Amino acid sequence: MDNQRIEFTPEVIAKQRAICDAATPGRWVAVEKGNSVPFVAIVRCATGEEPITIASSISPKRRDYEFIVAAHDNYPAALDALEASMAREAEKDAKIEEQAKRIQFLEDHILRITPEYKKSRDKLLDECDRLTAERDAEKRRADAAVDDIAKVCHTCKHRFDLVPTGEPYPQQCNGCNGDKWEWRGPVAANTDAPTGAESGGEDE
Image 1 (cartoon, rainbow, N blue to C red):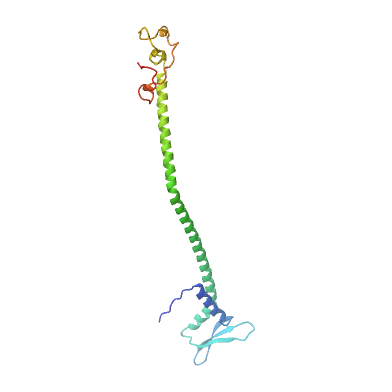
Image 2 (image 1 turned 90 degrees about the vertical axis):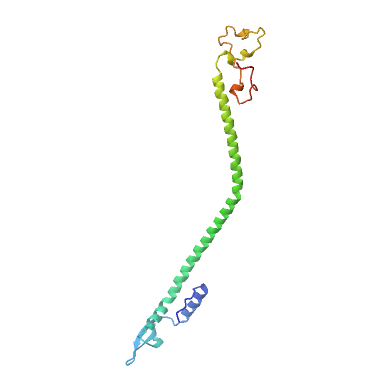
């Protein structure tokens, strides 16, 4: 029957350590004995004490004695290393679980604020579009006004004064040469307003 592997849980390790602690303490060695029929005995050797035979009549051909001695000397240290490794793995698992909780928290937070963010973003974009349109319209009016402000009769407000005599220009325009010129103000041609809405009179 094949050897069955056991899972070294903390409980199993505790039981295996109890077995180690219950064994005869000290260093074990294998000693060859016998004359006509050689055999190996496992002996506990301790300084200043009489040797104690742990096991005897072990066949030297099978070399089981080497395994028994090695297991006694090394098994406790192997259990210590295994426990240390399991402690490190448990620490890593705890950190992974903590990071997973933080990630889940951030994902939940993102899902919660995304609709609010989108709403605020859309509102800001609409406001930017509105302000941009107002700026562009104001720039067009300003550019048109700059082009319009020239000291010529058709941009002078006096050009649209009533002329009772029916003459094409009012009397005060005679001999003006631009000295009496005053800008007529915005008209439909240089604003975004409907035709005539801001006109100071008929634009000729």
